[in-house]
Length: 304
Image (tube, rainbow, N blue to C red; front, side, top):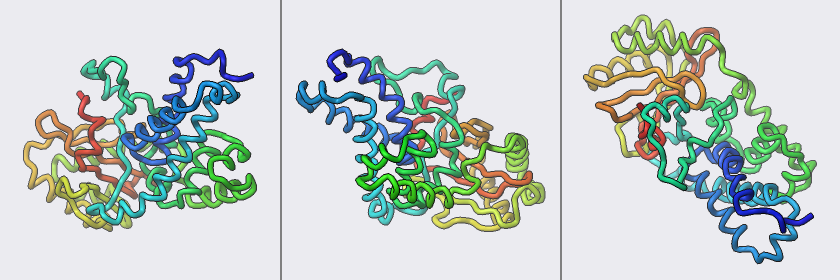
């Protein structure tokens, strides 16, 4: 059966799914939205007779979105070479944070961040690992391991055989390791204790909460001051955090959901200036990802 009975609303209803796929592939809400818009533009540019021949508009849109993301990932390495400092994925606020003020996007212009499902597949730890993969590995992993697409369909996106796509997903899976596992239940307590120690400038407690081999990576994009290289070692990170507190009096620190897991948000006045994500193992922080680039904090502009 073709699409003769497919309404515009039904086709538009695929947008949420496509945004979820694209964000996991790209790590950027803005780029994900652009990719999905491009896919829809290509759909509506098809002659009506061609659209009527397509048995599953959703599958067609997913394939096209995947190909667009693949092209964007291929050019991302060159863009990253011009990026100032480390590049991190865009952090997403939890729905409670977005809905606190009752703010809403303009009619007909739903905020894409509101439509992204927050689960372990968007945790910062996994997104960072995904960013280290080849574009083909990332697409194969996201479509198969996250969204359960068969390799026969993924082959149409990557232009490779199903067997080759299976190998790509397996290679990606080895890179992922434990990054795709659900967050430990202790994470919220550890993050709360980090917040309290940071607020009281208690270096000794911070050192105790940080793994000795912990690493902190910060993304300012050249638009906000921060370290350009990762800070390594629990003691050095604790000293850096206290130094930041000394230089930023009046900064308000809040525990908030970041990509679906407990994190910290720093505000000056009512403006979010920093969002921090944490990876926790055996009751200690092993990784901290700090995003200060204001262009990546736009989804937080409607926070409480």
